[in-house]
Image (cartoon, rainbow over all chains, first blue to last red; front, side, top):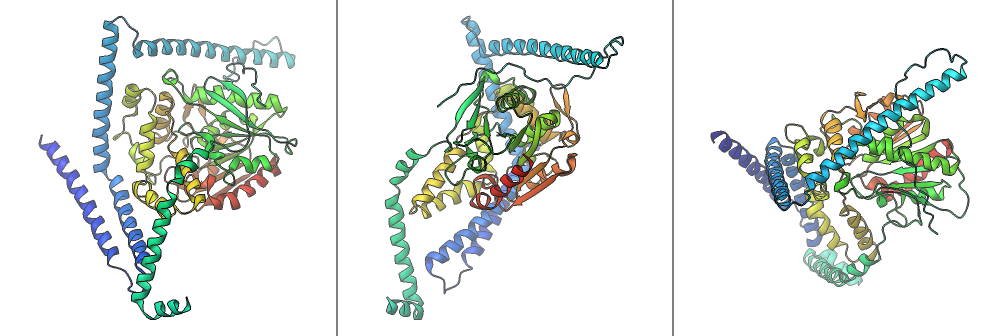
Length: 166
Length: 365
């Protein structure tokens, strides 16, 4: 409780400091005008100065641990809420003997694992065939083909027939 | 008129009144021009150079830019864009198209559009994108053109992926152009590098809960990189310049692209944040792509590294170390006083950088 209060007050004081500095910068810019300048031009200069001061303060705040801590808390809440919604929807769908997103995810994951195993096996086989080809070319077919380190796979899926558009 | 000028020169009060009046009229003209915004918005196209889809795989589409005359250079050029936005920023509008520069310079030009991942794609990894899709696309382009290699231009995250691809498949790449591509993520210059620190961002929990990284989350993060510029200055500048049809068109074209975000496949997002932003494995030659490890020292082809000095998203410090980490002898860097997007569509880049890059590539293709 006390730690939370301390964190909150730290964040508040940092936020207060940022705004104090922003307003100081803005006020400084607001009073640095020349009477020779025309009002629209003077306003433009003031505005530019104010934005610069604002941008500087905000950049400082966005880099501060206080901002990142606050974002973390916000993110944690968003993740918690999302998880809760997912769980609730999954439960509701299962209760009605319907398919939930989680089930589809599990099927997808199983397919991906299967695909990965096949591709890994294909890579090994490719490497062995390459080694055999090399051995044959070198005329040392007697030597057993050594298993070479697998290369990154190529041509995972044959390309579809190109769709030519006029 | 002369009399007014003399008067205004002599009396600052009259000068003040005159300028206030001028500003008032200008403001009225701007307001009167605002109804044309909708009409202008209707005219905006996504990509201007004529193209055809020549290859499709899952969500991916490969676009080719046909020309009336045969290509002047033997090696084709492939644009690899990031997974976080749409690729038409490279072909945004007439006079602001990177693609058009290369097409007009006689390159057989291709653009890789990764498409929009759905929930079914949440398990796609960098291995699928790099050793799967990208390999297939490069092989297809090589088969189609009869060239044994391709030139690759990678932008932003697409640049990082292109560097990984080149490291794993150096034989397939003739020249590599990196455009605002992150390589060394140790820098604390960029806000994204700070926000993704492991103590503040648990990417595993995030991906487990959300699946794909939502487009809105990415959009909000990008807006927050420069909140004053994006949320306050930009709308004010728009109103200020609302008199100019050209400004409105430029503004709307860029804004349409900026707000056209797409989600990122969950596993790729997890790998990108964890291995690059949090552990910085690429520069340590420990970056895993599937069961292979990316070693940037494997890159031996000529490289061109283009960076933007005012880039909020990928600071120069994140891209610059690339040239020292590769084994290429032919290396070049360009730093432009622009932002992340200005590097592609900015008038300075269009006039000064891209013609030079086309010449550089032409000499090596």
